Image (cartoon, rainbow, N blue to C red; front, side, top):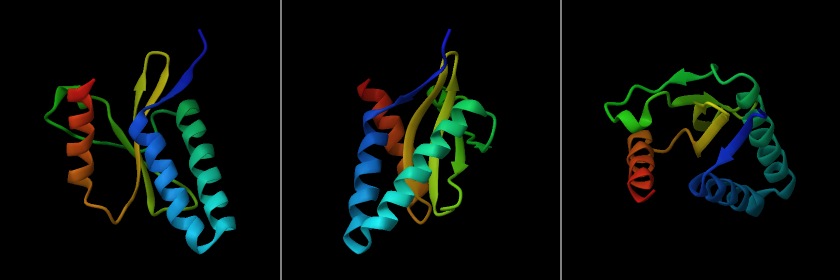
Length: 112
């Protein structure tokens, strides 16, 4: 069975938003950051145990982890390992209010 990365809708929108924000200031930097996020996402597939486990009382978030994108340590990826790979939930700037991000992830799960 091949392992894969499932990128949810919100994660894809996060990538677009991050790229657009940085691109306004530096198109080259936007490309570098986007490429780093994609490379790190692939690394998570290969090594899903890295990052910090996010403790949540919501059983739907069981196993969710938080990883820091290197070398752009301001960006955080929320993901969880699955039987056939990983599910990437969000990528956000670390200055954002993380509890709000978790609330949004929970709301997305309610819609699913």
